Image (cartoon, rainbow, N blue to C red; front, side, top):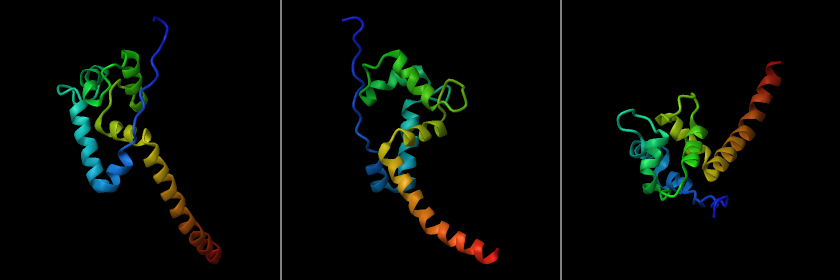
Length: 126
């Protein structure tokens, strides 16, 4: 079966439910706990090797090395080839369509409330 690739696994986006249940601080604590489970204990960061060795905990034991490397590169903001805690948390938020949608809706709501007030203030000062 060479040349036939497996379809990407389907993931259920649980971060919005976790955020609702745990609140913002609780969600961040859980993300930090997840980071600690996946990180290379000697280096203090998530590397492709540490992710591969811990992939079974995530149900991802069948992922190929190139897929694991791609996951690390996706979140590696500083180009060091690994994920620090902040990069991991940012990546988890970016990969959560539900949280991203909630963030966009919240931002839109804030802008709709604040912009008219700011615009009126600007016009009155102008």
